[in-house]
Image (cartoon, rainbow over all chains, first blue to last red; front, side, top):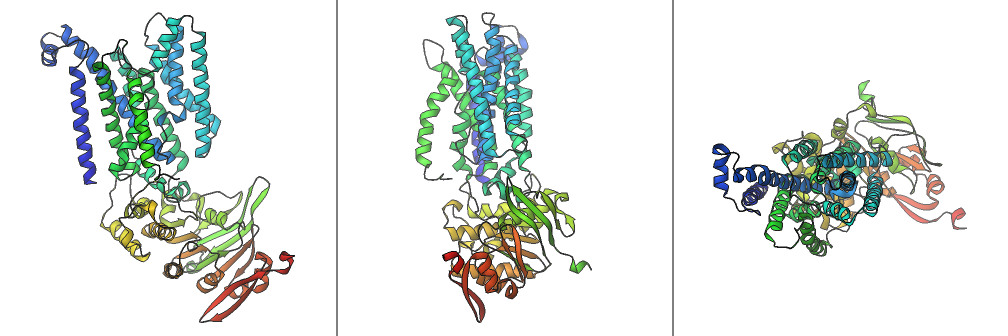
Amino acid sequence: MRSDRRLTLLLILLVTALAVTSLIYGSESISVLSALSDQFNNPNSTNAVILREIRLPRMIMAAVIGASLGLCGAVMQGLLRNPLASPGLIGSSSGAALGAVSVLYFTTGIGYTQWVPVAGMSGSLIATVLVYLLAGRSAGITTLILAGVAVNALSTACLSLLLNLAPSPYAVQELLLWTLGDLTDRSLKDLWLLLPCTFLGWALLIGVGQQLNTLTLGESTAQSMGIKLNWLRWRVFIAVSLAVGAAVSVAGMIGFIGLVVPHLLRPLVNHEPARLLPVSALGGAAVLLAADIGVRLIPTEQHLKVGVLTALVGAPFFFYLIVNSRHKYNG
Amino acid sequence: MSSTQARLEADQLNVSIGSATILNNVSMQAMPGEMVGLIGPNGAGKSTLLSLLAGLNQPDSGSVSLDGADITSIDASSRARSIGWLAQMGEIHWPLSVHRLVSLGRYPHLSAWQKLNSDDERAIEHALQLTDSTHLADRDATTLSGGERARVLMARILAAKPSLLLADEPVSSLDLGHQIQTMDMLRKFATETQACIVVLHDLSLACRYCDRLYLMDKGRVRAHGNAATVLSKENIRDVYGVEVIAGYDTVPWIVPHKLAANLSD
């Protein structure tokens, strides 16, 4: 456990450093120190406004969303006892994307509206309810995954339909780009949706660690050890639906963090599902903060979306992880 | 009177899946200090019965009671502290160390944020010793041999210190020495006022170690009682379709000889 404390401390330092860096770098070069003092002396100066209303919300969003993705990935992998499970497996991400894009579709040209994240959150919850209805109250894990796959397929189909029917190439581009995952031009208002849903999701996960540990011995044995499996499953599903749904609703689909971060950290906590949860949250926050700084630093003609960067870096890394550990996971 | 109360009692259990009857009016009991063997061919319903006794599944009809209380009325975590259930095919999904894996057995005794204390550590050490696995403590549990794995999973149960043990084929993957060691251990466990119900395929071990046997076939209890009456050559021929030779040389032994005539036709 002592090594966990060191790892946790290291990750906290990393997240802090990246958070500060995220406040410093941006398209406008501002002095953070003067912007900080301006908050009190001259709160309406350009520097103060940029720091308070653009950089700070963006930094908080990156940290919170990254933490959600890392945490939910670790929880799903623990619940399904499968290192390849991802938070998107139960339909909440694609449901959230569909909800958000539907609003964009009907309001295209008007610009970004506050209804986009609200619709995204609703989409995520509807997708989870649909999985629940499809799978039934006491479904086994395979049925649940199948229900998730089916709901994902339906959401993706509806997304394609919206793209297909979009009135102009400009609208198609807007819808498509939104799904790629992005943290620019988000406002403080987005935070008011993101934070409560996310924290509610995280709160639901308090104390599931030990239960995930017992699942190492298989579902029946875990049950014989007093785990109420149905409760645990739905608790995790609703938590993921809230936290990941909120993340996708404000930032679009940001892939691979939920998959790669827990996978990367697992050997450092001796493969123990409970100990993996907090470090995955911190690791996820660090990765998304870094990626969001990355898209600001990499000079591209078109603005590079953070979701594209995480996928570009994450996928090859994932190849490496699979090849490296394929002998280990034969179950 | 209370001394004659069964520790675990199953009353008229019925289970069917679709049109297949898995258990048909099965009743059984285990008294304090008793080691009870469940024997019978594959598909007889032994594992299903054991999982009902552990409270893992519900029967279609009938009831299971633990120390006189209906098992469905017992809270899951206090049930988990009383009953240890050893799965037939034990799973180990993550490469935890053996020590950590065995320590999971303490879960029913811990509240959500409680760390392992010295009592827990003692229980873990003791369980590792009893199963001859102390030297494995730092090994990756997923790289163990079949026999080592079975012993470590047994240690997980013993670390929980249950007052009733249900073991599904605990010795089928073990070598001769560890078979006897495990059976001795279960016997000792049962005698110390606990009770133990064990599914066995080795009839010699069954008649040597168990106080009473339940011989199951096609979801029914075909015979029950002491080993001598249950393991008659006629019963074994009827249920297993096998002729056996049996004898007594320090301990009783039963060896399958050939398929019974009506089967080999």
